[in-house]
Length: 345
Image 1: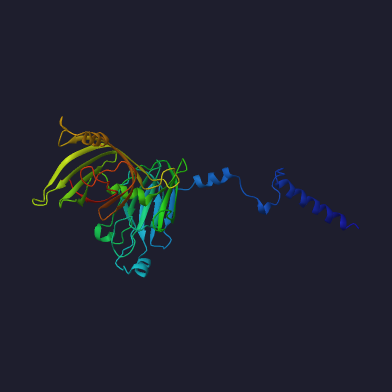
Image 2: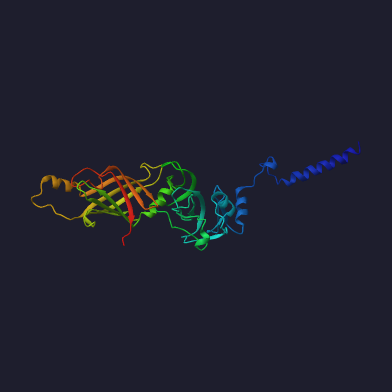
């Protein structure tokens, strides 16, 4: 009995010591399940010497390293050789230039027709989320070593701002291919392939020709500016001299609708144009039909579906409102336009 008492005292002391280590906290419960407070975790991350983020595509071809807002890209030579037969890559890392500011995040994906490169396979696109909520992009061209070993941002995607996240998934329009969607603060979601294609439209002359009933060709020329202004000219091409003659001009504004969860269908363009010049004036002897016709054509306000591709084509499909052109003098409407891009020079 005398030996039992000291052993009990020792046990009591040990239990008291461990109880004192708890610091009086009754909210811990099972110590093994305890998670440190959020403020402790943040404090540890803040002590990290560098802010580094790494992103990679699902096929392992491209790796994007973001360090303190700057970007470097590495290409996996083994993966490019296995998937696309390219065996001349040094792999990088390659710098990315022409970026407008601090890069916050990146996403990589193969999007049909997005980059405009024709190598027999889809070149991955890299989309950068900037600190101000805008997006920039470039193509992860596997032949970058032949072009100085530098990638260049193609600049900001138009109209997109306050972007908070993005995702690589199947498109909701078109053929169901893969694309990248960007989500803004208002909850609107944009297919960036549709947005990026618009960057090829601005400030170029887009021409349309259509054979008319008397053997010549009708002509239409469309110019869209990034600030929302537009010009449209009409005329004809002489069948003998093959020269163009402009007889009517319009100017005004346009608006494009790109969000896939908004009221208007994505890929819609609205025109609001006014007649600025016409080669002839209606004289006093003009009949009422001519007067009524030109009164109606003083303004052109209509909606179209649009398609753009990197080969230099812009297609418009009439939806509602006024048509841009008629099939000759006071004839039927032209409801489909296949423009091709030319230069102002």
